[in-house]
Amino acid sequence: MPKPLRIAVLASGRGSNLAALLAARDHHALAIEPVLVASDKAHAGALQLAEAAGIPSLHLNPRRYDNRRDFDIDLFTRIGDSGAQLIVLAGFMRILDGDALRPWVGRMINIHPSLLPKYRGLHTHRRALEAGDAEHGASVHYVTAELDGGPVIAQARIAVLPDDNEHTLAQRLLIQEHRLLPAVVSALAEQRLALAGADTVMWDGTPLQAPLRLEDGLLERGARDE
Image (cartoon, rainbow, N blue to C red; front, side, top):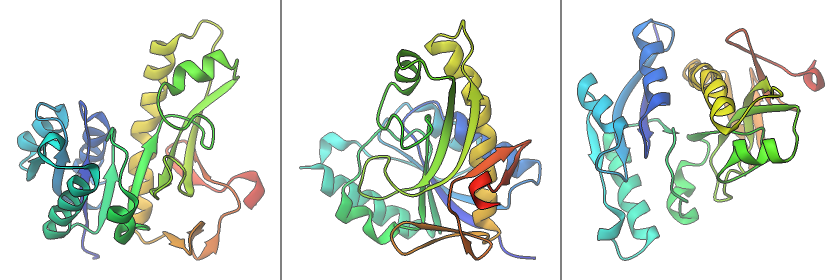
């Protein structure tokens, strides 16, 4: 039986996506070994979750570094020392230095609450509503130096309802985020996913023409790939 995938999770907030990963692991639906949870916020809920689960945790204060690059280099050095094979950004609210993250390209993913390439950055739910979008969603992508611009692996979609506001849309999408991220990490643990070159996502050894879609908790090829 293959060994669990060793992951490090970076989070700045409450850690709900970390909780989803741990729940999937505990239900034997995800073969991972979390080796580190790190945050730039001392009181992040994610750190409390890690402590409760017996996972090594780390808080680094960005204000104690001369610049962003020094912070990121120290952070990634510590992650490397943890033995992590994959870094999962789960609500980590920092822009990462391109030089510092370069050794991890192809081994670092992020979950973002929009249907990328739409709405990179913040306030994605508000922007989807202001644009009058009929559909909203979440994306998991490989992390590169470009903010929310790395190759998209998979997406989950929901309809925007006539009476939606930012809060209701965010809450309904969060349910899908908690399904999407474990599904992608599981596929990585099973070595079904890989990044080829700078921008080609490989699924079962063949390139994807469009992001995978989450359907009933499972990742499936989109229409352009069928």
